[in-house]
Length: 410
Ligand SMILES: [Zn+2]
Image 1 (cartoon, protein in one colour):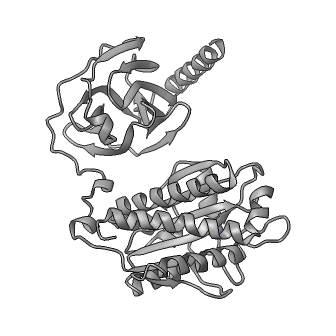
Image 2 (image 1 turned 120 degrees about the vertical axis):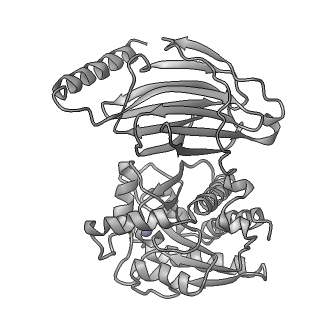
């Protein structure tokens, strides 16, 4: 494909210019030196050896199904750029390495469709390395063929390696190792947070429908559904059109000693044709679109950039990170699925980490869900109807129930 080659050359050219321009300075980028992988009986493991500790970010993409890992302030060892390997694993098909831009290395794992259950990505030291473990769904795991390497382009002298003899990482949270699960804690109290309110309307649709009003109605509906279970105490951070600072919302959840915190919002996008669901848990994001959304949702906070240090500390201390992500995934899946079944196709905008003030400081698993788009004419019209609002509440309810059941206490 000539277009791709041209892009590749351009990237190399830019890289060369960057390298020559910075040849006088020590290169601040950490070198990604080598990689190896192995199919273990239970999971697939890939190890990237890297010179120094670096920030990284991972996400999933569709068509074809793939997982990527971006390592920032990093460069690939010469010869590794553009390498691609056929991996005969039960959950991974192809592995690719590329210098995505002068300061970012991207690892892409093309997955066997539907075979991955979850993944763990983490750092190990001595030597520094990033480890990616992919856990297949149980059916795929039982028939695991051995992983072997078959380079499909520009081999870099790498082959499949013996297993990593490292301490085993914790299993994915969906099979339970977090503190919440270790202590056998269940869910009793749930705090629902209707976004915005009072002097802060949130986003406003073309016909004047306000995010704050729809979010409150959705939260009330969800409260009723949860209460019919007869085993939850459900609180709303606001049950009227009230101005409520973001920091007070999680403070209230902490004060109620809630087990779950769910902030409900409606999305607005400059792309008017965008629809569907986007769900967040607290984390940093290198994704500009996520940060723009976070900036909008954070607008009513009186905190500023100097408070960033505080954010960092709180995110690091947030031991509910895994649980929040797990809760976000379940809510996202059920809401999207329920809306699709009843109202036709819509966009899956994914589960993402984002720096949201309203999630900072929560002492329980906390997520923020953008349930539909007020900026899309069709979803806006639907959001005016009882039937659609109830469907959103049901989707959220099902996600929460799946999470509660996954704790073995539901
Ligand atoms: Zn909002």
